[in-house]
Every structure is written in structure tokens, then in C-alpha cells.
Amino acid sequence: MSSARDAIIKPVVSEKSYALIEENSYTFIVHPDANKVQIRQAVEEIWGVKVVSVNTSNRKGKVKRNRLGSGTRNNTRRAIVKLAEGDKIELFETR
Image (tube, rainbow, N blue to C red; front, side, top):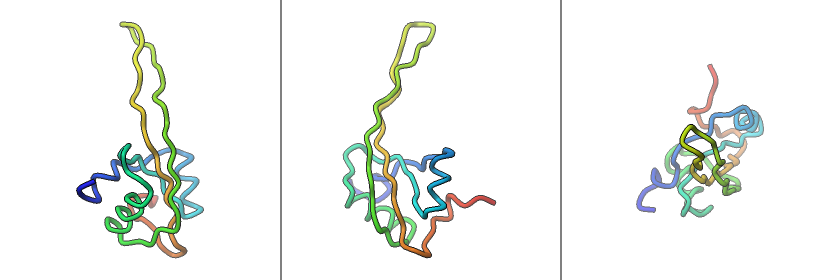
């Protein structure tokens, strides 16, 4: 990864990810080649917070049918990042 913004692609917006915010954990879709150290450094650099742990998972894309037959959604790699007590990422805050 050449920069921190290359490792983090986008945040995950779902009910489950918003429930994890209560536990000070945030979910991101990350680059498939990014490792836990690179993800930790990217989050700390972009948002200026202290990361306690990083858990990653690879998700296989679903097979979906359409009028031309079937296709496959993209495979994704997700990272659940737990922050230190008192830190938070404003991007996810509800108003």
C-alpha cells in the first residue's frame, strides 16, 4: 500500500456495524492485500485515534440471478477495528 487511504476503501453501513459502535468497534471494507498492521496504521493516521485490535474476514461474493443468467458480486475483505476507550470516529456518529 502506498498510502493509508489505499488500505481503507469505505465504511460498512449496516445495522450490525452500527450495533458494534456501542462497543467502540468500527467496520470497514479494506483492500484485499492489506494486512492487520497496515489497517491499524491507516486508521490511526486518517482519524488520529488509538487502535486496540483489528479483526479481518474475507467474504465471498453472492451469486445473484438476473435476466441474462447469473452473476457474482465482488468478494470483499472486512476489518472490524476496536478503538481505545474514549476514542471515536466522527464519520459514524448519528445525529
